[in-house]
Image 1 (cartoon, rainbow, N blue to C red):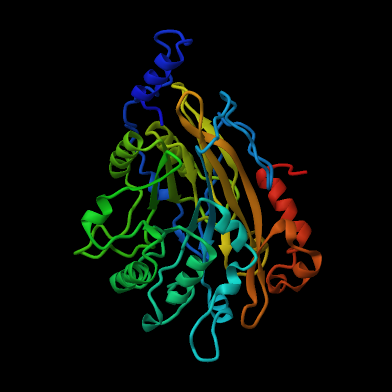
Image 2: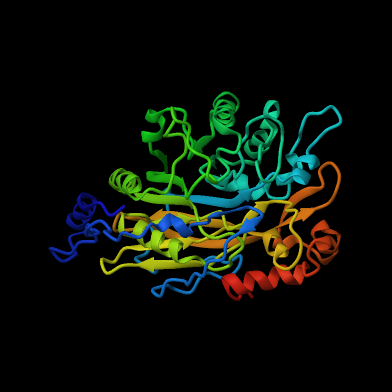
Length: 425
């Protein structure tokens, strides 16, 4: 979006606009601040978090309510005839050992169909569906394992494809849990078994890393980029320094410059933040400002394992960017116990519609967040995800997480959504 030539052409065509009026975003100088932002960007393993205080940015609009849709930003009348695109994204897929066992069949193979069964219709209905695949798919040859060094069987990837996901995000702190072999096994699986799915964030070659993913539909072209703050202290392979996309300002600035130039709309999916914190950290806020200043239109964040606010950011140039700081967990069965564990069972599914307005710019026409809850029962097929609107008190009482955090209930999940996203009634 924000292409000067396009706007000038529309201005000449309409003829009724004042000469010299332009919607082009003025280019801003690169951020010269010297803070090492990654230092408080989510260090700490999945079960052992660090404390970090975070405050939301001041120049925000009210976040959308739970399971709501908003028409922000309020701009010119939309022209949606054949020129819209819907996308959804869900948060972290964590294959803790009990989740893996829920898909284990008697013959030793796996079937994870049940994980997504309740959500498949909504996932498949979107034009583009994104998922944060937290753990590497290294296959059973490397041993299926849970926290702290995760590895998933290939059948989890089959279930993601069957559920209707189109883009799988692999730039996470667990990308190198099984080293170079795990990463290469994962890439080979996706290429051979599901070439129709786009895999972002991990690479086999430098040439692949240099590519930016563009998706085009109904005349709308979007770019999607994926980065992580780190890999839990595991060094990148010496012969593959390009293996995982990291949050590096210079690299990202170059990527965003190209993406903003070639696409109508730019999405960044950062793996960032501090685990188990319901508010964004100061580092998330700094990175969000950096993304805004470099042409990003939408941020879809993961890693904290709990939900965080949704807000609009803007700058003096008139640019605006929507930020989902954290979508929380989509799937998990943590071994943690005590206060706050219940928070990890609630996630959010971002729902966005893009459309081209009468001035020719692609913008967010509608957006919302739908609450989901991970339901846990023992046995094959016992783990699945429900829309919170369909979850019942009976199901909540049967959720095995109750034995790990007595606070968990249907009402607790609803109140958590109100606390983070605002009133939804």
